[in-house]
Length: 363
Ligand SMILES: Cc1cc2nc3c(=O)[nH]c(=O)nc-3n(C[C@H](O)[C@H](O)[C@H](O)COP(=O)(O)O)c2cc1C
Image 1: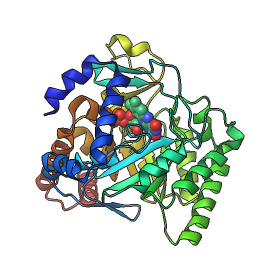
Image 2: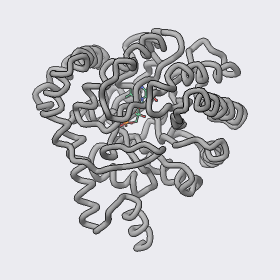
Image 3: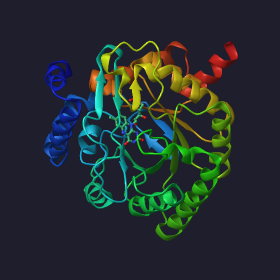
């Protein structure tokens, strides 16, 4: 069905197409009946492949990455389309417009996107109202960021504010310190800021758990452009502060020489197919440093079952997609989950972890 809708959407400017799609999916999300219809066309076709991480049970290992449902307007519809989790956000404490338009570019020949949105966000108030209407059983994540005008040494206040406001409304929280489009945000990944930030985040989680009686896991989302020593330090800190997961990766500021699309020189974060290998390499290195102490959510350039499988074998425990969903539509979720099941059957393994162990032994 997406092959009929996509040509229409792709005649429009990328952000316009995005806004229209979220508008329609948001409208569907508010109706039980329409969400069920969408579910019977798409979601029901995706088989179960139970996956457990962060103490949460996911129906299968493919979720929607952050940035598509920034204001938590359409997660019911995305769940009906078949995703087993939807990471809403990035939300900033105060509403902010983000960077000037145009700021999303399709790199058609490369199956990629460059974006420099810069955390356009309706702010926490409207985001919370949207989450309070939640009906779906799919896992809902909340990705929090900082406002553009919050200085780095006060950034933790924005993250803590975000956590406090959404703690009870979501199944997990992501601390996003890896978007390339908010000035200096990625500097939060340096040990100088990171130790203190993670300490404050963990402390907030502990206090909120005490008050609410609910444990909401917290994940850290990292960039693919980290140097090996930076990644090692970051993994050590995420482990010592007892974070619940690492999400690898966000978009890259790199421009591989293989890119052919005219828009490749646009400034911003590159996502989609050309990011796949780089993101998988980061996952492999992070898995080595984490040594099974934290689960990894693998994201970045997954376009088919092979990419998904490679990320899982590199050490990811769960997957997210964004750009290939724009290029291939919801049918991709079903194709990947069925493909992964076929691979498990081929290797005669019951689980991804078992397949990873078996293949590592055979090498
Ligand atoms: C248009 C666009 C907006 C995005 N916005 C966010 C965001 O707000 N927060 C975030 O953590 N990641 C954001 N991302 C990054 C994705 O969540 C994902 O990490 C990245 O695109 C790599 O996955 P992909 O290659 O499957 O798209 C955005 C990506 C795109 C393309």
